[in-house]
Amino acid sequence: MRTLVLNAGYEPLAVVSFKRAIVLVMNEKATIIERIEDDPVWGTSAAWDRPAVIVLTRYVRVPGGRRVPVTRRGVLRRDAHRCAYCGKAASTIDHVLPRSRGGADSWENLVACCLRCNNIKGDRTPQEMSWSLRLTPRPPHGTGWSVRGTERADPRWEPYLALAA
Image (tube, rainbow, N blue to C red; front, side, top):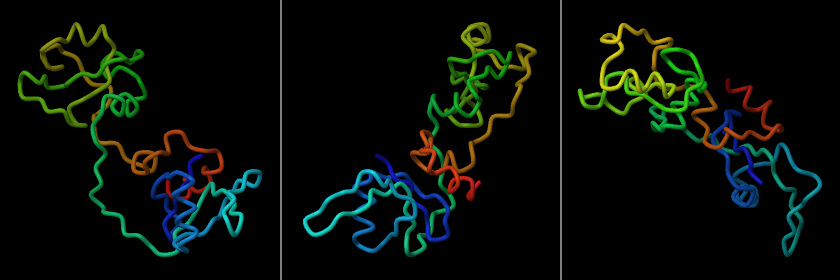
């Protein structure tokens, strides 16, 4: 079971295991605001509600320069699994400026691409092929990208994630 951790200002910070959440609650560093009623955690001296969402008692400053690491899965997710050239279903990624010409593995140079377009394009740039990109590749943003673990969000978290959007 996973628990959503909210900052003192109610912005989502992370998703942690319920064990880590219980430790934060027991040490009075967080309070439970959404619980799972049917399955308490039993200790030697008391029973604790199993937390679904907790809020920290003190505000934690989050560094502003948090960059999302570039991954194949992330590029496909950012581009909604659609080819940047033809718009069909994408299963591969493509370097807009090929690596052989100095293209980097960056959010600005990688796009989702279908296998057919990737094979046709090969080691050329879209300009050389007279192709245009259907989207401008840029780093992802939003709470779904900045809060680790919210890709498989629990339905109980939706009101709290919507506050930060």
